[in-house]
Image (cartoon, rainbow, N blue to C red; front, side, top):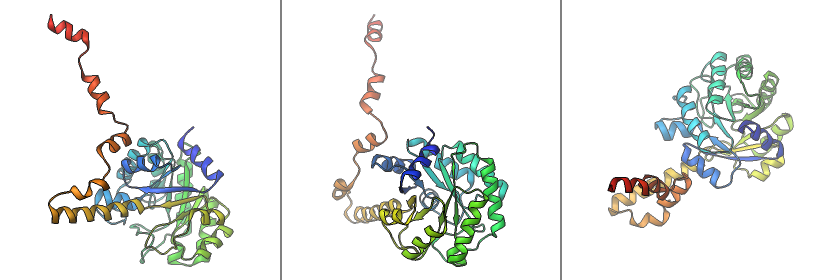
Length: 295
């Protein structure tokens, strides 16, 4: 079974939590923790890999390569942030093909103008509905695996209003999108109401410090959402912990006080499915080789 088909089965059975990751090792941690799927954060790739803000600075080639590392490192389905599709309709078509080739189970594509902005910041601007519908139709026509999940994201709530967000979502479904991601809904009631107005698989973004309230998986499932992403949670915790450690290392001149808060070498090797003793055993000469050498 392809991961894309598995993802469709998962969302048909319930609400799927997808922690966000920014590299393949973090993807392995998500899988190890028992989550059924992984979300590859566009902001995470920009922030962690390139050290730049989430304003569309990575290319399709870079995103496909980085997301592909994650998809190949885990057995569970991965979806990725495909920004605006990296251009017009033709670019959106190529985006789907490259992400399929990289092993992704799905992606979301948004209706912002390029250059895009983080979905929870002010100053966003949108393309018109017809242009977004063209991107969606081209993406659907280009995919080779019919199970690859195309999620249309709309940022209309922060730019237009709630009613227009619903209108855009239903138009994107008519254009061929498989699911809808309403970005930056502002209240619990808006999450409820959107699910009543849009009859499709829905994705909720539970990012911290943004426009949306932090709702539980059970709450969102009861409203009718099938996917919940936590895009930058692991990244923010990692960066906070690393910053604290570096401060202490600078002040104390040793990392000794952090040893019990570190992943051990053995834990890392287990995560990576690496057994150094087995590797050493392979390199050890066989008895026949030793015998012929002595002769």
